[in-house]
Length: 326
Image (cartoon, rainbow, N blue to C red; front, side):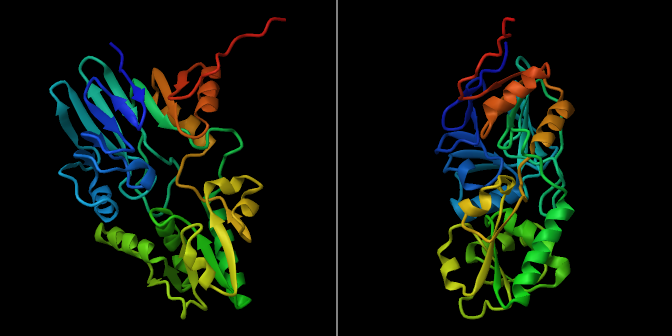
């Protein structure tokens, strides 16, 4: 019997009674990482130790928590075992590999990134019969430039702004992207200030053993001469004058990103897999079937089918690939 996979407020696996990244409070859910669109107040969760720390900061303690290290297999039910594997998205982000006696193996990636990063564990790619994968950047135009090239651009942006007596402001999410930026900019010795929430989360990274160059918490009076890292659309931005702003996101690959975000520059630094990495990941996992989720899920599933892989988007209307008559 194949896996029964349903999608509503997350991915629901009724055969074992567990959710994957449920977005509303449920009885039992795996939590792959602690970004706000993947968490809720659940009764029972399975996650990694760093994700547990981030969840306590964001939603408080859970009633029942199973913390698993990467590569450790735990019996989830009488006939199903679970193993967490690094996803490369942010610190502690995990993929879920389920091994069921009757249904075979299922790998759920959550958000993942195959490219190496500076503030997350390296992604792994265990084999599985069924792959449920995130496809945020599932179109051919989303192939990210080399990390060294993006880092050099960020450093130049900050140095040039400071030379002009402007405050460089990098707009990036507080969990994951901020810590990556801290490590990218560390060799420059530039002084850095973080949004208060980002500073609290960075302290949790440090509790997990990750080290950063010195940084301060944003101060509206003493930010001159500092590189400031804030979340996009944060109200503190209006306290900084004169300033030069840059959005740091994978969507910077779109030519309109700089104008959509109202910034002076846009840098394509992402903690998600690009189109080329999505294809490479499928080849590494070697699944019999693929279900795609998020972003350009329908389009990427069609790409896989054109390559001979049975693939369908979850929760989307899939367009059948019918040959045209000539």
